View 1 (cartoon, rainbow, N blue to C red):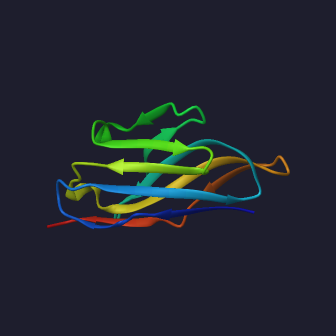
View 2 (view 1 turned 60 degrees about the vertical axis):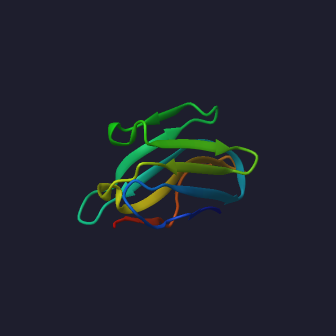
Length: 120
């Protein structure tokens, strides 16, 4: 079994910063792509950023220049540094990973989500 656990959410004022972390655990052989998604109230879940095993990153337009995704393969952890936060960034942020388990099964795993509230 593989699990992802996010941390780092909370309340922040517009213009502020937060750093999210997502740690993977369990019977993991290798973690391939990792990603952050978000779901705002009343909206569908949307992709925020992705990062490959070699740390090649891609971002959706609405976070380019403000958010940075990174990973530490030794720690099995992905991060999302969020700067210049806006009220429209308010959402539940979910970590996602494509994993090869120790039994060589391909899995797509989701974290439980961490809530970000950008408000003055």
